[in-house]
Image 1 (tube, rainbow, N blue to C red):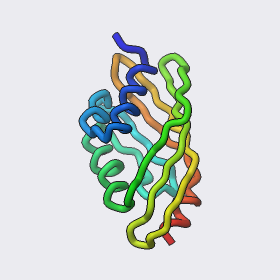
Image 2 (image 1 turned 135 degrees about the vertical axis):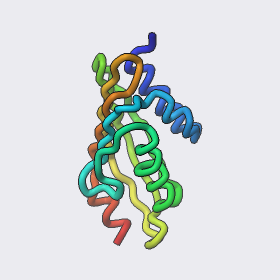
Image 3 (image 1 turned 90 degrees about the horizontal axis):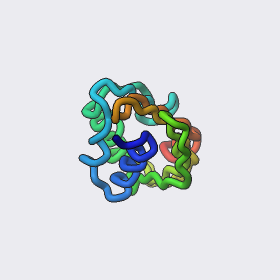
Image 4 (image 1 turned 90 degrees about the vertical axis):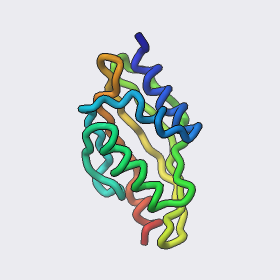
Length: 129
């Protein structure tokens, strides 16, 4: 059985490869995925298909070169903390942004059960104006 740290690291490794199937592989059917209020795809989505549609596809459609770069991954047992940076260029304005971000993950029974994002939404909003 993999640790929570290994499961979340596998998600980030898949993100770095641009492997969508790998990114979704360990997200539980009942996972509650929360994007911060004020972020372009703010809300809580349940399950991998909702995350795919309302987060990954939505950001890919709105931004050119949208990326997350992981700086540190912290092991807190069944919880894992990812710290890094978002970057991208908003298609409608042509403006770029870079924003610090923290992801808080909860893992149980070999699946991602909860995700919550904390980021500087003002930097993203400025690029969208």
